[in-house]
Amino acid sequence: MLPAFLDNHDMDRFLFHCNQNRKCLMAAARELFRLPQPVILYYGTESGVVQERSMWSLRSHGDLMARCPMNWESIDKEVLAFFIELIADRQRR
Image (cartoon, rainbow, N blue to C red; front, side, top):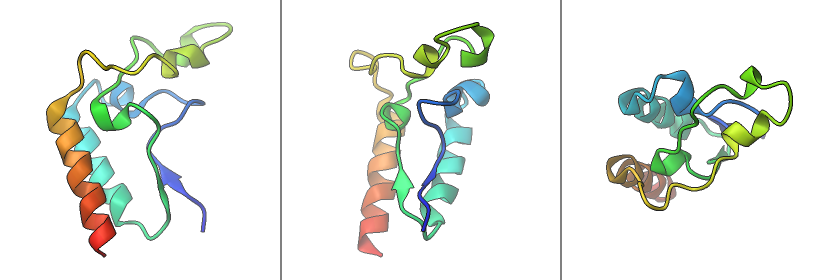
């Protein structure tokens, strides 16, 4: 089976696409975790990392927008708790 993901280093982050709407991210993640495939979480998606502008807005090295540093100082605790629960639920299945 092919793995499933919401975002990765070769695309804009999911939160960027939904204008930082956490409810949109959580709804999408809920659907992602219902799939039978292995789930891939790109670092930071589970803690609310979002980029400032599209990686496609730069002529070169736009991927650095999606590869921004981990948000250790500003982790979204609500989003993180949500992902922890999703993972725990999936492990119980």
